[in-house]
Length: 361
Image (tube, rainbow, N blue to C red; front, side):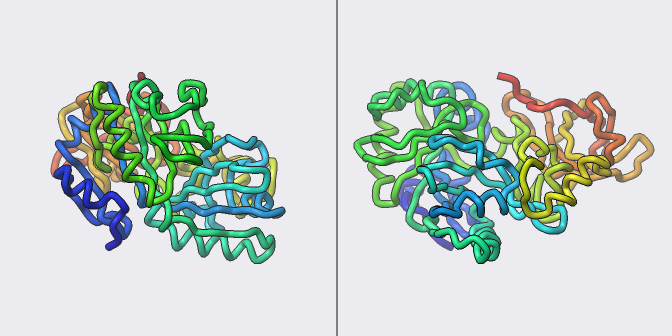
């Protein structure tokens, strides 16, 4: 197990540390519900330094990215970020990622911690054709997600940049917490606004301490990965390994909006055909109509008790106080308002297909 740079700080804060994607990570501090509501109503900080960062540069950097990702990176201006995925050749997804355009021919790809080696090998294989310069920065960089409606106000004193002027999915490189050349990105996986801060491992402790000094009057708290999961699920954001994986296509997962057939990319023809012919299954969102908590792997059943799918993510929503989840069902069951049942132990609990997000700010 690897330790992130702030491992000792999290231990001293009383974090419950668990193995996650090869790292010891803080999963909770005071409890999921309290941490979740801190982010929804105020401001909290996640240490997500286990994420992977690849720098892609050179004359053919864009050509390589266009080949291996589903979204159209040619649309990115310097200072833009873009959600995308790496399609595989079997109608599945290698990983989902965020692509940042740092300079004219320089891009940063941020990938999931559990897939760093897999993604690196995948990109490297295709780069044999393009010859872009690839650097794996994952071991050298830390990532803090400062999230919540009070994040901008709480952090403004730490930067000379106007944080409120950075639009969603844009970023600036500038000073933050006394450190120069920090990436301040208006992204995050909570749906409650805020920033993600990319810095070197040697800089992250100073930034962490200053963030908590500046945020003290706003009730800032450290937040663990468990609350990150409930927050992203309330927004209906996919989690790799749960809702998307090597066997699920971006079309099935409702990610057609990041799958642009205006360019050639890995498996584009097959995915275009699937979109045209309509997939046989779709990822849907559901809310339980009675008490119960849906969990990953639970069966989804029809009115006659036939298994029609399975839950990929599920929880008791701290914001809505009801069971919510995502799962794949045959397309005929995917329409909003459709009644299904979730098999929770021996009981089939009625549920309704709903439109995302679950949590509407």
